[in-house]
Image (cartoon, rainbow, N blue to C red; front, side):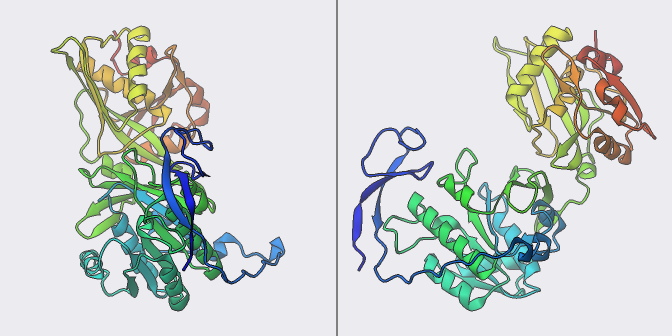
Length: 451
């Protein structure tokens, strides 16, 4: 039997271990992040690993030759064209957002090329079968393994030699070499390291499902995200059907791409033209502005809606959904100081239709125009889009990739665009009237919203 070592205190943020407890972690400086854990020393006689032999860089196959295309184009887009063989990918998201459904569909598509090992540590095989029946993939060659011991899982990986493996979830896995409970910092770090070693040595891509904290970050030490090859987040509002899959880390591709899905009774369906879907029920009333934004390298047209009403109390309310609250407050100050539209005695409500989230500054002009339109109770001209970053002095700054944004607007039937004056030399006005503005006051006058 392995003998336990002395008790150690492990930081939940950075994973640093110290023999004595302290209020502050000596590694990352975080307060009250140390957790007491009992680490079991590894048993003696463990076989010595064979030493790696260097190989020439020219003899290493290219990434494209090692990619596994699933056929789910939105999923492959986020991963840079497909799953890289031997990679370790971490997928996180809110509870019930659709992580297991997405990986179930991906497993069924990949199972056409060979067996897929699906390790379920939270659900029984019968529960997984019910979800597979709902998704319509119950006949796929998916091998279910209800196991939480990482050594047993890796043994099955060697025996089955699957095309793809899914571990749902990494927080339920544990190693007998570590004396702490499953989900602890030491267990997460050890299990992730074991799966990483197995993925590289066997050439099997492994997907790890990760829980998230109330702040939306992957539960466990930050080192978990550093160890894996790619980190994916499935985002969305459970009250809306749309889901956004984005990569925050990818060693084999860009982190600029996003995938758009729609949740239905049969799982996640791809949204090939998100702009058209998001604008199907757009409003023509005051306070509604369409903005061409970028999600990665993909242009999306989103509708920003604003409602402004006199406050009934002494302190006006500011409620936003889908846009940054601090940015909204800055634009309210710019409207008051630079455009003469003071909303200090009004409640302001801002929302993005469809449950999307937009963080890029290029949506500033559309957001400010939506609030001004709601305040004036005047709807802008039909078929108009606005785009531009707004500075504190009221200037409208140029944005990146203006041509692709306007091409998307043109393809959906929009006829007029208000853009920064600095971008006029970068656009073609074929079928679209493009007007440049230098200040926010000038932009509002173009759509009859200024004083």
